[in-house]
Length: 267
Image (cartoon, rainbow, N blue to C red; front, side, top):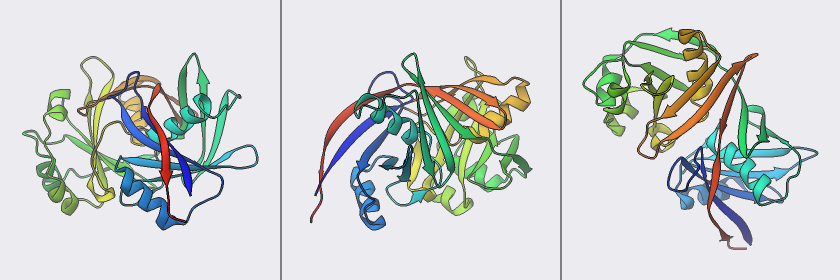
């Protein structure tokens, strides 16, 4: 069996930046174990598979180790493949996913994700998690999604403290059942972040759209503004123009194709 494969750098204007995602368009779903094996073989943060439906697309995401409920950058990359390589001619794509209905629109060469905002609740800052994050400073606040604790958000006093984190993945895995997002006010944008997810096989994710479902509501409330400029300060880095509107988080960015190829699966 031969399957098309695209590797796309999402939230990037040039290759070698943003977050790489592998995209595999399908005619019909493969067995789950096969899709997981493909994702492990690709060995990027997310491999996305989609199947055309009745006016929309079914979309699923796999890290090298697990299937996940929500992924921003691989949704952006999937839309990029449909718009740029597969002849999708409308201005908006509808994806049906485990995280609900997601939409991606295109305007002036950029793509905008329409994702759910999460409600946040405060939790205690835990010293063992701060120690696992490997920074000299302790977080000043912690919040988590109220209904779906997808990731724990640890807030630091400034951007330098987030940039200087050097987490121990094994220690972080033992300290928290969740992924951990570190964030602070930005020096040249509204806020910065980093995302650590060793329990889903990602020690540090370069740019994490789903994390902004928590970060945008948090910073919108703190800064009293709905339009926010964000930067994920991983080694690759990526920029997101964000808006909180009617309980939804809109994230705008660009994507660029790095590679196109063929997957050969045994019959």
